Length: 166
Image 1 (cartoon, rainbow, N blue to C red):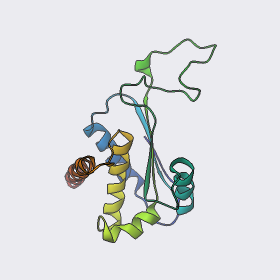
Image 2 (cartoon, rainbow, N blue to C red):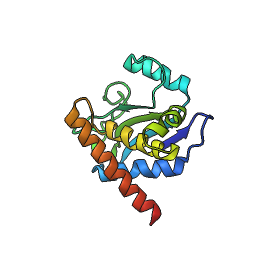
Image 3 (cartoon, helix red, strand yellow):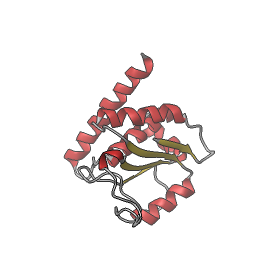
């Protein structure tokens, strides 16, 4: 897992949020080598990503960019999955599952927190869980899926709180 704070508007406890993302991965059954990027960016950066990749308007709180699909051959390379001409094909067990990127805007999280999760820290944790679940294939495009995703988020947050206070 790679985590980076690329903004200066709000404090981000990278180590804690990285532990949370790892707990979600393990709890959701991700086993073996895998890669996930957790990035914290400013409003300008997330607005650009939102426009470029989702045709969205303005900044948002979290974006998720899944890479490998469940069941797909892991270790996708940038050119579409083929080895270079001078290399023999590698064993897929050696390659990590490229999960994707979760991009969070702490400034938007801070604005949304009072009406959503409560505190800034609670909102940041919720966004990490939400983004990782999206990367792993969960969605909330219909009411049933949205309820399932909300329930799973709450279970994972409760589990994390129990681990952190133990």
